Image (tube, rainbow, N blue to C red; front, side, top):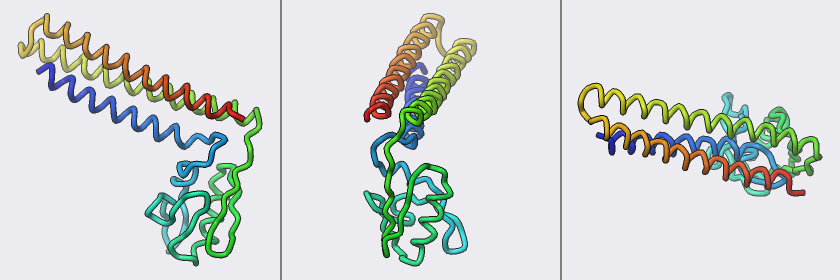
Length: 181
């Protein structure tokens, strides 16, 4: 029973870690990455789509649409996204120039990154709380004993501490990336 609860908790915490990484990747740093533009919503073909790789375009240093008639839509969508990116239509492709960040912008992005990291920590703690309730419920239903509950709680806390450390490590790397000139 404890192994099942720990396994489910580990899976949920890993999902939170993955969500936090993806969320943090969208915070702009001085580097050009596809994550900067892949979630921008583009209005084309009488509907909206995300500029995710394989949905509308291949994102590298320049954006190559599958249909050249959408170049203007891509430029417009990127400009309206308020991401601070400057797209330029170059015939069949869109070039996105990424201006260097000012010190003030770096600090703002760092605040945003820290908020996203804290959100990840909160979600990890919520998963821990659910696991602790599951262990208590299992003890109350006499599926496990009190000693097993204490062992389970200790293992859940160790897992929680490890995941929080992972989030903190991701945060340190993002801070270094943001403050790099």
